[in-house]
Image (cartoon, rainbow, N blue to C red):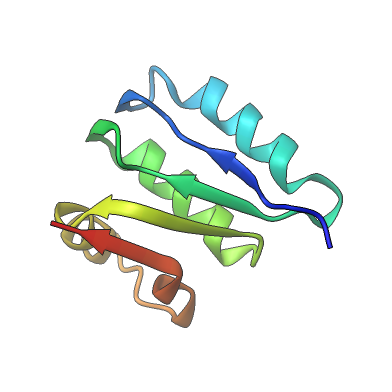
Length: 92
């Protein structure tokens, strides 16, 4: 089994930065790969980024680690409460 790719965005993750991050994430998930998304260095996260993160987890190929607890409310506001939401590990 291959090691998962690690995506660690730094700074804000908004519609203005999402294209580059999406390309990195897609490369990690290519051909059935697995990606670990480390959000320990993320500032502002907007709806565009949340949608990308949800899609990556729902695909079954990604998990999110070190997510600020404030993201739980943002995910919930978008209605994301599927079993795949358990692929997010929150920190204070």
